[in-house]
Image 1 (cartoon, rainbow, N blue to C red):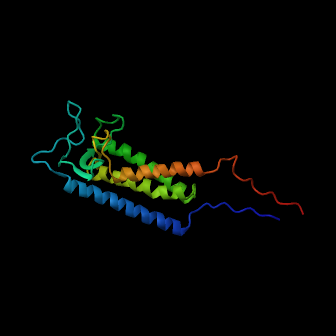
Image 2 (spheres, rainbow, N blue to C red):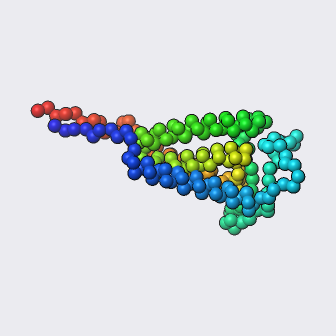
Image 3 (cartoon, rainbow, N blue to C red):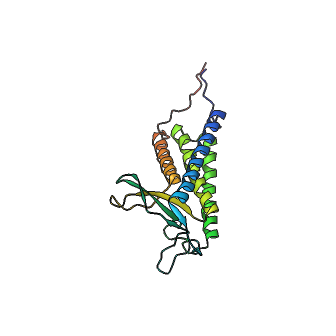
Length: 205
C-alpha cells in the first residue's frame, strides 16, 4: 500500500534562524548606509528649518538638510547624492500632515509584512521565496524606521543624469527590488494545478 507525504505546514528552526539573521544584517546595512549618507552627503541648515515635507507654492519640497555636491560612485553610471523622500505616491497625501502620511504608509507596510511572514512560516513558496522574505522585510523596516526617526526617507543613489533620469534610491529600495524579482522567479517556477502530481490512490489488496 502506497502512502502520501504529509503536507509541511511550518518552517524548520534552521530556516527561521537563517531568515532572521539575514533580516538583521540587511536592516543594519540599510540603516547604517542612510546614517552615513546624512553625515557625509549633506549638512545641517543654518537657522530655522523649513516645514517638514510641506511643498512650497512652486510645488518644491525643501529638504531638512542641505545636499553636498554629488560624488561619483561608479564613474559615469552611479553617483552618491543626498535626497529626502517624503513618500507621496503619485501625489497622493502630498499635502497631508507628516503624521498622517506616516500612519498610512506604516499600516500598509505592517499589513504587508505580516502577510509575508505568515506565508514564510507556512512554507508557501520555494527557495527563491524564502530568500525574498528578509530582503523585502528589511527594506520595508528600514524605510519605516526613517519615517519614524526623520519624517522622511533618506535616499542617496543617483543614476548619472547623463544616462537617463531616474529617482534617487537607497539600499532598502535595492533590497525590495531584488526581493520582488525573486518572488516573480518563485511564482514562475511553481507548478500550476494542472502540472501538480495527483495524490496517490491506495492500491487495492
